[in-house]
Amino acid sequence: MKMRKIILFFLTVLVLSINLACGPRAAVKPSQVITGEEEFSKAEELYEKGDHGQALEKYLDYVEMFPRTSFTPAAFMKIGSLYKEAGQNESARNVYKKLINDFPGSEFALDAQIEILATLMNEQKYTQLLQWAVTISQKNFSRVQKLRIFMMNAESYLATGERIDAAVEFFKAYGLATPLEKQTVGGKIKVALEGLSDMEIQTLISRLKNPDDVNMVMAMKEATSFNRDVVVCLLPLSGPYKSIGDRALKGIEMAFSQWMARNFARFRIIVKDTGGDGKKTASVMEEILKEKPACIIGPVMAAEEASSIAQAHQIPIITLSQKELVPEVGDFVFRNFITPDMQTRALVSYAFHVRGAKNFAILYPKEKFGETYMNAFLHEVSAIGGEITAVESYAPDLTDFAGPVKRLAALRKSVARDNATEPTMGDKTGVGQKTAISNLDFDALFIPESAKKSAMILPQLTYYDVKNVLLLGTNLWHSGEFIKQAGNNADAVVLSEGFFEESSFPMVRQFSAEFMEAYGEKPQFVEAIAYDTAWLVFQTLSRGSYRNRAEVKDAFLRMPPFEGVTGLTTFGKNGEAEKKIYLLSIEGGKFVQLIH
Image (cartoon, rainbow, N blue to C red):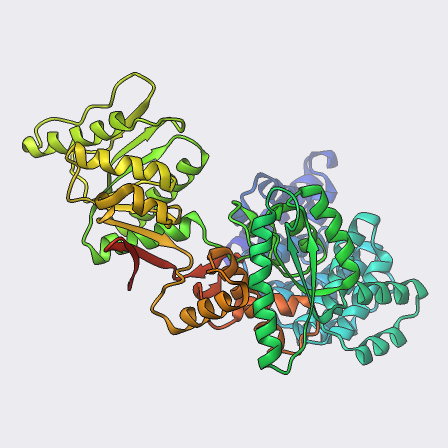
């Protein structure tokens, strides 16, 4: 570097000598000699092309050769930004400080002061950032520059737990923000206000000078306030799904009655009829906002409409719906229900780990329900390390299952002959279609179908010699009619279920007995899941002094495994219930629980 400087020095002297002695002055522009404009332009070109490594070298060379030109502050700014871009925040700060010291009157000196704050923010050095910010005089800063300072100050206060100071700085930023920027800053103010006590709110108000800011605080506080003892239940108590709503209500009523009899914490339950209709559900949701509930249980139907409104108002909602994608509405939306993923995961795990099944086949109706379960089963088999050896579909209105069953039987026979021929791809009749995945036999067959149709399929399997296969089904098989119609053909079945009233677990037996005594009938899954959901809500709400509903939401995510009659339950980060569900088999003409 020293040699390069010496050479450049002598070259400069030589050029000047030649110009003065022999040639016209126009041959070399004086500005290039004094400012190094050409060298600076080369660095700028490299920067614009995206060659930041070479550009940095050129800028560094420039400030060494031309330490006091009109371009030097700009070069220092570029050097600082390139260091910051590379994560070298301390190096960037040193450059910015040199710029400020050497060129205090430059317009870049103001930017450099703000960039020093940015480097400290990058390193999460919030205390140092706030200390540096105090030393900055904001007299000559532009609106945008002041906005950046206030926002970084506020974020630093927020990160260190100083919510009142954070709110004050956010309000300063809000006063400078454009209408579009106000949306972002307003959201930040809302975050800063979360968790502030009434006394802290009064302290904040005393520090705000603008009456509009005070009104904004009061409005936001009112919007985030809630009644810790109010739980709303949304159920279809009229319309086509009334029977489901009535059953769910019985489970919730029983949980509420037991809780009030055994615990000190008091809750007020508000039950609203959704009619199972989306528009009515949305209308009911607008009504219950006035109640400021701590949590919502339900709905069963129209869960998307209710979830969207609950999310918008940040009210934790635990839906009782199997509808896909409901938890994806937002982080305040939960679901406690049996799902296709839950059922297929339990079935595949049991078949693979307990029964030793490695190769699986699927026989399913070619419609939404069947395809949903088929895809879920495919995913679980792949995840566990098994293999799908055959997938057979059939038309949903099919009543004679000889065709699809014969194709499965043909696959097994072709394998048994000596593995010599590939399985056929099925006929072209349109009745069904089989996809042969490989020339392997299967140990287990999954049939996601109703109890009635499955009971028709099972004898066909026996007739066409599809034997010694573990038959897997969903909770739809859990009915007395299935056992009656399938007869001895159902002896090899294993099905998943969300609740089993005849379980060997003492808690379940007690619940079933008390439910029978109260309502004169056996509880089913809907009653049980509603009962469990109400209990876990009461339990969670009674455990903490929540300052806002965001803390209630977080409590659901952090709650220890809840031991309910539908199994151990926790919530994943996506709001989806994670449960160990029941597996049932059939012995002596009765359903029995499998311990897994």
